Image 1 (tube, rainbow, N blue to C red):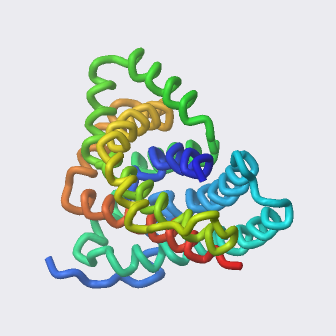
Image 2 (spheres, rainbow, N blue to C red):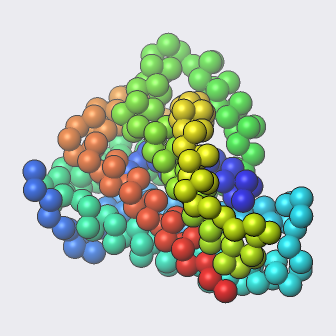
Amino acid sequence: MKTMLRRTAALLGALLLAASAQAQISDAQAEALMRLSGQWAQLESLSEQMRSGLLEGLGKDTNPPSEALQAKVKAAAAQAFTVERARQLAQRSVAENTRTEHLAELMRWYESPVARRITQAEVEDTARAESDMKARTQRGMALVQAASPKRQQLLVRLVEVTRAPRAGADIIINLGVQLPLALARLVPPPQPIEEAQLRATLEDQRAQLTQAFGIITLAGFAIAYEGLPDEALEAYARFMATSAGEHFNDVGVAALEAAMLGSVAALKP
């Protein structure tokens, strides 16, 4: 499980950038937003890495399951962690949560040349699938330290407006609760898992997780946007601080969590 959580954490910096009375948009409009914002493409990488991270983690366990049980988990993971499922779950979440009043502004932003460059950079960064979070973070922080004061301020500002550290901690805690429960359906543990106790243990680590994700996100942004000019990051930060930008950032996080937790819930014998 730890290996899978590390892989997930390494993705969240890229994946968590993006993401009045509420009205539901259509599935077609939701898909269009997901494609323009890059989440549609990023979910393909996420599904593959969740599946491979789960299987790798089982193999590295100090008391790994038998080959027969590992084969059972592999078969279940192949059925649960599919890009089709992840996209369907995320699309439904985006459709249900995006406010129609923001749709026009969101489409204008994501169809703009600068937003397209940012989205492409994010998709390419996610597709690199770096699983060594420590090495990635060190490399990213070296870029931050070598950057101009203006560039450093822009990267810090993006961390603030995306609220990625808090969102990352939320997702890791929820995933850290749901994944062991799902695995217990496939590989019964020696002792029953107490969900409330597990969540309490993880909640005790929230402050550390949030702090860690602050550094991970800052380093990840430095890597993802390395090829973009300061002007692009300024435009991105301005958009993310608008009502529409803040709203869709929350929508994107909710959609990511829906895709991840829904896929975990689909792990069945």
